[in-house]
Image 1 (cartoon, rainbow, N blue to C red):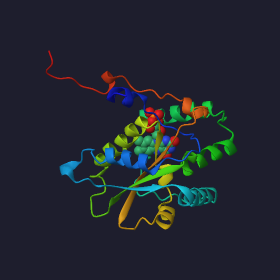
Image 2: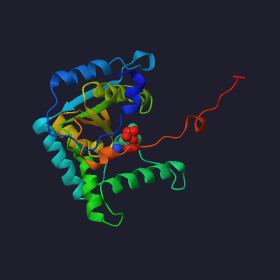
Image 3: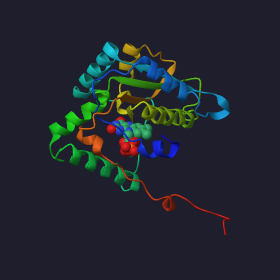
Image 4: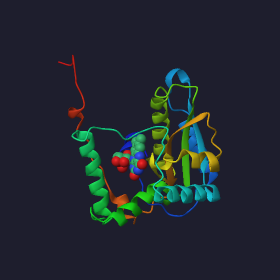
Length: 224
Ligand SMILES: Cc1cc2nc3c(=O)[nH]c(=O)nc-3n(C[C@H](O)[C@H](O)[C@H](O)COP(=O)(O)O)c2cc1C
C-alpha cells in the first residue's frame, strides 16, 4: 500500500474481531512509530500495550465507573468548543452518522449509554495502546510529536490488516490505567488507541467521514 493510499484508507474502527494480535506484529508497528518526527528529536512518547486479563480488568472497571457516573478525569482534555461553532456542528454530524448506522434513535438513552460504554471498553479490541508522556515535559509541547507517532501507528497498522481507533474515551479514568497497567503518576496519560482486526460486518465500520475541501483551510500566497 503506498503512502497516499494508506492515508486515505485509514479510518476509525469501532468493532473488532476477537482474534488476538501477535506481539511481533505490535512490535513492528512500534518499530515504525519510533521514526515519527519530534521537536529536536526529543521523542517524548511512551507506549503501554495492553491485552489479555490486564485489558479485560481495565475495560470492566472503566465501564463500572462510567455506569456509576463517576466523574471522568482525563489528563489531556480533548473536548472543548463553542456550541455555535463549526466544530460543534462537525461533532454533531459525526454522532448522527454513527447513531444512524448503529440504529440508535436520538431519544433512546439506553442504547446511547450502551454505545458510550463501547468506547470505554476500547470498542472490544483485543489490544489497547496507551500513550503517555513524562510530566517533566510541558503539557502541550509534546502533543504535536505524539500526534505524529499516533498517526504513524495507525498507518502502519493498515500494513498488517489491522484497524485502529484513536480514543480519549479510553483514558477518562487514569487511575484505572495506573492501577492495572502500572503507569506511574510521573507520566501524563494522553491518549488511547484501540487496535485489532476489523469486523467489517459491524455497522459503525461502514462510516466514511468527510473532510472539508483543501480550499476551505488553505491560503496560497505568491503563486501567480
Ligand atoms: C484526539 C482524538 C480523540 C478521539 N477520541 C475518540 C473517542 O473517544 N471515541 C471515538 O469513537 N472516536 C474518537 N476519535 C476518532 C474520531 O472521531 C475520528 O478520527 C474522526 O471522526 C474522523 O474519522 P476517521 O478517523 O474515521 O477518519 C478520536 C480521534 C482523535 C484524533
